[in-house]
Length: 233
Ligand code: 6PG
Image 1: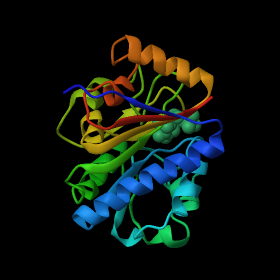
Image 2 (image 1 turned 90 degrees about the horizontal axis):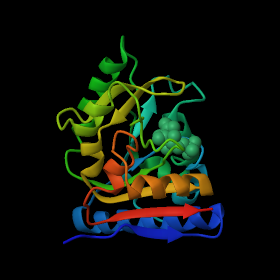
Image 3 (image 1 turned 135 degrees about the vertical axis):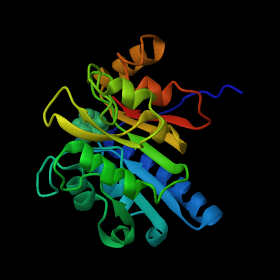
C-alpha cells in the first residue's frame, strides 16, 4: 500500500516548534505505553533549538526515553559546533534531563574509530527508532548525507554498520552519520524545515533527481508508513 508524505504547514516557526513537539511527544507516549520504552533521533544545526525547548516541556516519562543524534560533527562536546552540546543545552533540561542520551562523538584516533564506538553504543537500540527528526540543508543533504561526499554511496546503501565517518562539503568536514538504512528503520520519520528556499529544494528533491544529488530523498521518498514534513515559510 503506497502511503503519502504528510505535510504539516504552520504560520510561524514558533507555532511549528510547538506542533512538532506535541507530535513527537505523542508518538513517544504511544511507544512508552506499548513497549515501556521509546527512542528518539534528533538532528543538529540552527533549526531545531525552539523545537528542543518545546519538547523538553512536554509531560513525558523521560526516564524511559533514549535519545541519539542523526549525525554529529567530529568535535568534542566543548566545541560550539557540537550537536551533542546543542541537545544538552536545549533538550536535556528539566525533567527531560532524565532521558538516556547516546552521543555519537567519542574521543578516538580517527573519525571512523569514533563512528565504530558509536555503533557499539547504538547496538543497545537495536529495534526501530520510534521517531527520527531530520533537518535538511539547501543542498538537499540530511543528517550528514551530503551530495558529493566520498562516503555518500556507502551511507546511502550500506546496511551493515549503523554509523559511518563521512566527509561533509562544509566545515566541520569530519562528521559521523547514521546511515540511511538505519535512519529509515523507524516508526515515524519527520523532516523539519523552515524557509521558502528549503521548501523549494524539497519540492525539487521529491519531484525528480537521483538520491546522490538529493540525499534527503533516501529518507522521505522511500516507501514508509509514516513520513511527515513539518515546515514554515
Ligand atoms: C547538522 C545537522 C544537519 C542539519 C542541516 C540543516 O549536523 O548540521 O544534522 O543535517 O539538519 O544541515 O541545518 P540548519 O538547521 O542549520 O539549516
